[in-house]
Amino acid sequence: MSVNEQKRIVIKVGSGLLVSEEDLNVRYAFLFGLLEDIASLRAKGHEVVLVSSGAAAVGLKAMGVRPSEAGVADKQAAAACGQPLLMAAYKAVASEFDLSIAQVLLTSDDMENRRRFLNTKNTLDRLLDRGLLPIVNENDTVTTEEIRVGDNDRLAAKVAQMIQAQAFIMLTGVEGLYDRNPDDEDARFVEEVSDVSEYIEATKSKSALGSGGMLTKMMAANMAQNGGVETYIASGILERPVTSVLENERRYTRCTAHGDPASAWRVWLADRLNMAGSITLSKDGAKAVREGKIGVRAEDIQSVHGEWAKGDVLHVYDEDGEECARGLTNYSSNEVVLLAKRTGRAVEEVLGYHSNADVIDAGNLVILEEHHLPWAVPEEEATAIEV
Ligand SMILES: Nc1ncnc2c1ncn2[C@@H]1O[C@H](COP(=O)(O)OP(=O)(O)O)[C@@H](O)[C@H]1O
Ligand SMILES: N[C@@H](CCC(=O)OP(=O)(O)O)C(=O)O
Image 1 (tube, rainbow, N blue to C red):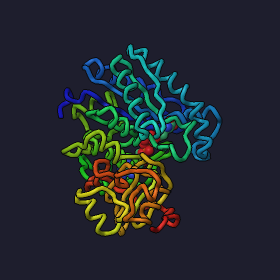
Image 2 (image 1 turned 90 degrees about the vertical axis):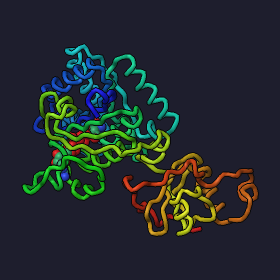
Image 3 (image 1 turned 90 degrees about the horizontal axis):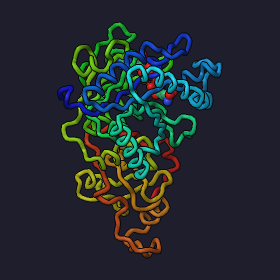
Image 4 (image 1 turned 180 degrees about the horizontal axis):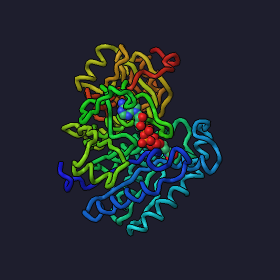
């Protein structure tokens, strides 16, 4: 894809680029280079959304807490303290380039609850139409474990899917992906990735300020790939950090988009940050689901994990613990247990109301292709209800 075709671009910048590890001050030189580059992209007709980390790191300094000693509660408080400082820095530098900025703070609910997803998408579209530069961060201060993304790599990938970006660029402190920790002198640079699952083991170590390291960049790249978005991982410590990637002037890692991007609905269903629970199917049930023949039927259910409400999205596993599909359920977890225990009876007889719907209808089920990163069976398997 040529640079001109990449109209919508999501750029994610990590804490290590924005904030100095030594004194936790904002790196103004980096901000200057980044916003100058964004202004030049905007002048050429690109629409840019920036996803920026750094609030917690800046806030920790203001609170007098060292990053190595900070727990989750400290970081949540630090984000409240640091976010306005970060935005003040962005505003000051953006005005040098006649850019108007807009702050968008999100939680995973804003991307996974269908109504909030559409609302957030409309707001971002409107900001872009009006020529603003949306600067997105997680709303760390209010998130709880259940609605926390925890890293801006995956949050940014969700934003890229949401606004149907053509390019997703993660700027970080290294030039891209290596086949092992880059501190290892035998580490080899990886220029192109199709199957990110090959690099999950190689990306488990983290840096001092970052939240997710390269591992969450791989997960994020997988989400973007599935949504048909090309992902680039590159160093931000350079002049024109984004343009130099798009114009192929330097080294970076490119994660190719999968040939046939799924529809927005299927991407929304399949690439999620949180799942409400899971269902394990019999061998034959899982086979028929994988073949796309049927939805999830009560008679094929072997066990149910977790508690959920009608309309939640679930994992579907086979009896070997391999994830075969994800889908939106028509019944609550309690109802599914009752239906699975009393198969052969009409729904009305079991639940007291009429319904012809399967537990998950085929149209609301996404069969996982090979290129989706699967999720492991949850650890709280012990709480599973066998049916
Ligand atoms: N295989 C790998 N390839 C590249 N970087 C890796 C790898 N494994 C671990 N890392 C580490 O991941 C870091 C990038 O993640 P992180 O610091 O969280 O970035 P950011 O703050 O920009 O999101 C690199 O600085 C490097 O130390
Ligand atoms: N939302 C957090 C950043 C979380 C995060 O993903 O950090 P990083 O790995 O540096 O991109 C903050 O603003 O501090």
